[in-house]
Length: 292
Image 1 (cartoon, rainbow, N blue to C red):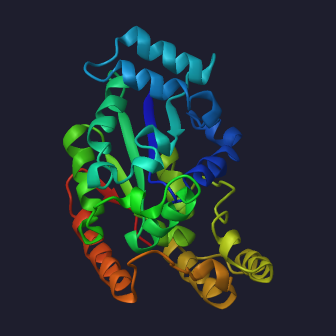
Image 2 (image 1 turned 180 degrees about the vertical axis):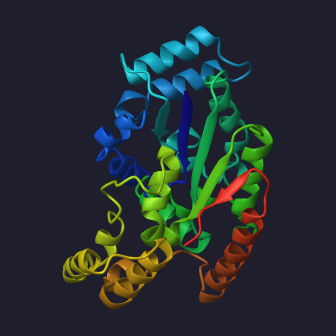
């Protein structure tokens, strides 16, 4: 059994990814893939990880956990996805370091299923929108200044997070993609996490587009694709991009940032850093990046 885990990041539609996959339970089951409800393991998994902090879990403990998650079924591939497994959002900047906990929590996760091959999947997001999204989500309980602490925001790089994961879990392949590309990449992300071929027909591929495109555009897109079957995935993505450009919901595409110390210059600098960072991550060994 391969255990495939979507480990985050926060505010990149991770829960929607699991729901999109769960729409395909029947077809995935035929492929030997199970995507159980997060409710089955969101308490069990963190507790098991704490037991495996220092040493790999005994095989019997691993199997008991898997049985508790899967029930009587024994799939060839078990897909899990719970972004708080690695870090709760309040601690993203713990001790002024971006996702500090990923270094040891990813190892705990690996130890929890030590005798099974694993895969990790991670969606990245431009810090210029990620940090405001996190701050706004936490605003009622954590003031912005307390959330970011003394972190130098210009030092926030996803490549550091990816490097920590690869160092802690060198035997675990890591697939990453950019949140900004998900309208085009959503089916590919679903396929990667589920470990299935691009030829497998699944529903839910428009779950992101439907959130950022006007209803009229979605209806026209579906009609167009039925009468103009794309020759390949590249052509399909070009069609999606054209419709999104014409029918995008303005409110969904524009982000207002109202945080202390944030300027247009900071946003531009973080964005440039992020774009360069993605290129570095793409070249890292053991990392596969999904591209539009």
